[in-house]
Structures are given as structure tokens and as C-alpha cells.
Length: 440
Ligand SMILES: *[C@@H]1O[C@H](CO)[C@@H](O)[C@H](O)[C@H]1NC(C)=O
Ligand SMILES: CC(=O)N[C@H]1CO[C@H](CO)[C@@H](O)[C@@H]1O
Image (cartoon, rainbow, N blue to C red; front, side, top):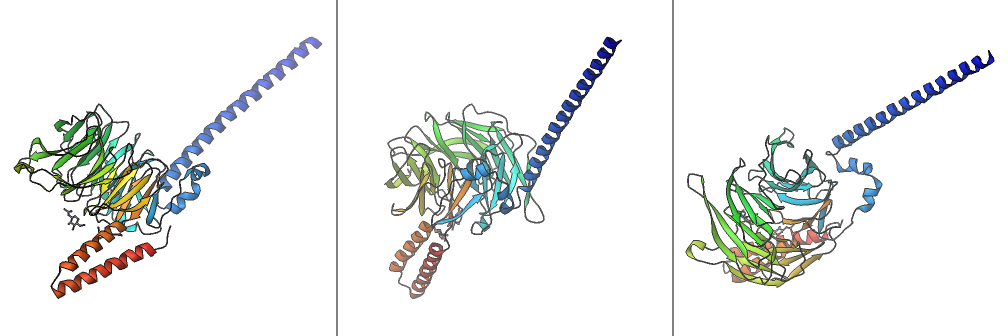
């Protein structure tokens, strides 16, 4: 009797323990699901909250991330644009001068308004790159679309910018990406200002010329061992490349009068460097080019030549400078200023005299990935971590003042003299006010 009761009791206890255990584990499961869901929601919410204002976002940023932020200040620093949560690899100004596009490995492309570079707050619009990130971004000539190079997709994706009533944009990816064609790492893409072709280039010396729908029109082998930089000229006629060999090669992409693609022909070479060329840039009308080489110099070239009449471009100036693998060069659109990057540093020169005018050291925590003047010669921008640094282009001001002083010496007409004197005074005042502006 007693024995049977004991068994019954212990069975009962066993069953109870089992029940409790089951209930607890079930609750745990539910709990962890709930936590996960809550995390998902808060991630979504913070993603939604991100675009409107920088102020709102900052307190939400994890402390660790903020501690890692690189600080940099300089009297000529006009602003630092911060919103990306990943490293920025490429910058591009729209040809109407209104926007700056940046892309980073945080899966976003940001569109900034150049109008508020001098404001305290820098708002930007965000385009998401689904399941991928863009390493390169270029505006279309009409500033209503941009093309990107996808890191994982290894192809070109076009985004349309649809203007909303409030003046901002929504972004929509084209239904189909371009076909995958490159075998090597892609170093640059571009759209001709004429709107006639798109260019993509890889380190393995391949340049592809595409139509806007994604059909390959031509393939160029640069024969330069490896390529370090390739770009379309601002006039939209030329494609140039540089790399391991000391020459810069320039091709013309020719179209028939009726608009259809004809051929790619060799236009001219820039010969003079004694080692590989890291990068180059054009002035806005493609009449000047600047190059920077492993030989420790930058060079300025007059490329305003009729190569079809056997005229060769000629070297205007050679200037020694600090360089390292990956050095970038930027020529201001008016051809008056040259900027060269070396690791995390940037040096700015007067293009007409070759004089070193400014040195910015430790601008970013990483190597400078892109360096550009804006289309109005007002700013120099660069990237090299999560921030974009915007500098006043005082070199341009000083050069403009020098030009006008030279003109003043030659001027004999009293009216012209007075006007020049006034312009010099205005430029000097503007320069003084930039230099006297509150430093950040
Ligand atoms: C180039 O820039 C200069 C000076 O900033 C400007 O006057 C000129 O119209 C520009 N030319 C082109 C082709 O954009
Ligand atoms: C803000 C600034 O310095 N802008 C000047 C940059 O240089 C050009 C000339 O190249 C001037 O016209 C700008 O005013």
C-alpha cells in the first residue's frame, strides 16, 4: 500500500517538474522571439529616422562609434559632411553645380545640396542600395539620374531621381542592372556630358564603352599593364587612362552626325613622366590636364590641340610633390588650382606658378579615396573615412586676383582699369572674409 502511494507521489512530482520545465523553456523561446522582434523594429525605426536631420541622429549613435571618429580642423575647412555610417569611396558633383553625391559601404548613396555647405546643418537625401553597396557614383548630365557601380553585383545600376513637390527627390533603381562584363576590379565609371555613352574601366586594362541601355559599344585594351585611373573628359569626347606605364593615353569616342556610335580612335598621349601615373584630371573644357606620378611630380598639360592635324599636347609645368600609391589629383574647373593627395594629406598648388599654397594634414583617418573641386571653383572636397571635408578654395581667389592684376598692368583704357580695380577689391574682400570666418 505504502509503496504504491510512494510511486504515485513520485510520478506526480516527476510530471510536475516536467511541466514546469516545459513551460519555462516555452516562455524563454517566446521571450527571445520578442526581443528579436523589438530589435528589428527599432532598427527599422532608426533607419526611417535617419534622413531628416543630423542633430536628431547623433545622440542615437553608439558611443563606441563616436569615439572612433577622427577629428580634423583647419581655418580653411568650410564644413564636414557627416551622415554616412560607412567608409566613403566616391564623390561626384552634378554638372548644374547643385548637388554632391557620395557613396559608402553602408549601403547608401547620399545626395547633398551644395547650397548649404556653408550652413551649420547639412541635410542629405538617402538612396538605399538593396543587398549591396555602391563603390562609385556619377551623375547623369541632366542631374536627374545617377549611375553606380555595385560592389557585390559587379555591375552598373542606374537610379532615377524623381523630384517631389517639396524640392527633394525619391530614388528609383532601373528595373535591370547592366550585364556583368568585367573580369578585374572596376576602378571608375562615367557618363559622357553629351549623354551618348557610359564608360566603365577595370584594373586589368579593360575599358568598356556602353550605350545608355547597357549594350557594349566598344572594348578598349589600354595595354598599360595595370590601370590606376580612367575617366571621361568633361566635354564628353574623350576617355583617358593611366597606370603602370608612364604615359597617359587618350581616346576619342566618335559618333556619326546622325547619333549612332562609329568608333573609338587614339587621340593623343601625354608623355613625360618617368614612372607610372596614379591619376589625372581635366579642366572643365578639357583644354588642360593635370597628372600625378610615382616619379614624385605633378604635371600640367595644354591639351587644347587639334590632334587630327598632328598637333601634340604640350607640357606647361612640372612640380615636385609628395606622393604615394593611390595619390589623387584634382584640377579646378577653371584650371587655376591643383590639389594632390598623399595618404591622408592634401596639398594645394597654384597651377599658373606651381607654388605650394596650402597643406592639409591628417584630413581623414584613412587614405584619401576621392578629391574634387566643385563646378564653380568654390570648394575642394575629399573623402577618406565616414566624413566629407569641404575646403574653401582660396587658391582660386588668389589666382584670380593675380590674373586681374596682370590685366590691370596692361590695361590702358581708364574704364577697364577702374572695373579691374573694383573686381580686385571685391575678390580681396571675399578672400579676407573667408579667412576671417569663424573656424570650425
Ligand atoms: C568653365 O568654368 C569657367 C569658369 O568657372 C566658366 O566661365 C565656363 O563657362 C566653364 N566652361 C564650361 C565648358 O563648363
Ligand atoms: C570660396 C572661394 O574661395 N571661391 C573662389 C575659388 O576660386 C575661384 C577662382 O578660381 C573664385 O572665382 C571663387 O570665388
